[in-house]
Image 1: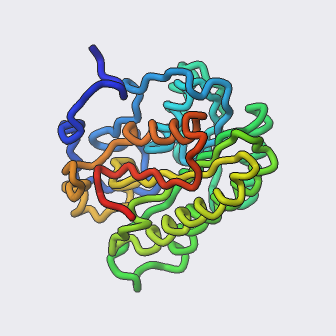
Image 2: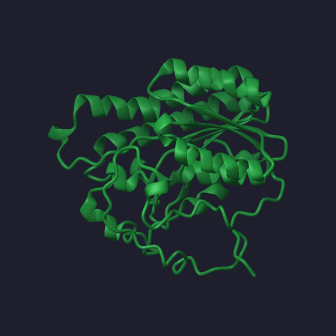
Amino acid sequence: MSRDQYTLTDPAKLYADIEPEKQKMSEPGLDAELNDKADLGEETYRGTGRLTGRKALITGADSGIGAATAIAFAREGADVAMSYLPEEKEDADRIAGILTEAGANVVQLPGDLRDPAYCRDLVAQSVEKLGGLDILVNNGGKQVAVEDLADVTDEQFDDTFKTNVYAMFWITKAALPHLKPGATIINTTSIQAYSPSETLVDYASTKATINNFTKGLSQQLAPKGIRVNAVAPGPIWTPLQPSGGQPQDALPTFGEQTPLGRMGQPAELAPAYVFLASAESSYVIGETLNVNGGMPTP
């Protein structure tokens, strides 16, 4: 019998055949060029109709966690608008094909999250082409490891905050007029919000901001019937890591610090997003759902 997300497995031994190696990729990185391909759930995620009729916008939907979430959403019955950088078209086209095969109405909307005009138009185009919007996943992100704060340029600091934080603000603000009771917003934060790495000072700061933004906004929108939550991944194998997200020397041991002793795969994140997007989590508001291999969090 083939494995899916419901198959009983030993989590400590899962994905034992995937071992990251040093691999220098130019930013933003592509799944198509990733050695030891990440598992996005292409062969394993089985839908059960939990998001039938829903309309979702996902940023960073071309690869990694965003792509795995898009696949899961489509197989659960949702239509999906995909946001990604134009240079990530190869990955995005592949994912769009998988979503279409699942029966989803798919809208591809490339652009740069650092651009407020694009962020606002992204929402408008999603609403128009999907016929509405009731799930927003702010997932697109920028992560570049730098060992010394003195070497973090103003441009990198600005780009990281614009991509990770400002875009979330611009997109969420533009989406609110279209969200009705029952709608959900899911933001991607990180273990870095609680346990920042010394090489990711700017990135970790954005993730702490996202976590706080999520909890504050959840209180504001709960009386309107709109739920806001976050997912906090641990060390997950995506193109973000070899394209500057981790120092090259750290890649061979990436994820070994977790109690499970390994990195996670995007396919292991997707069910968390499905849960928070579905009506099953109707009483879950302002929650940060940690998917990190057992690393303690507050």
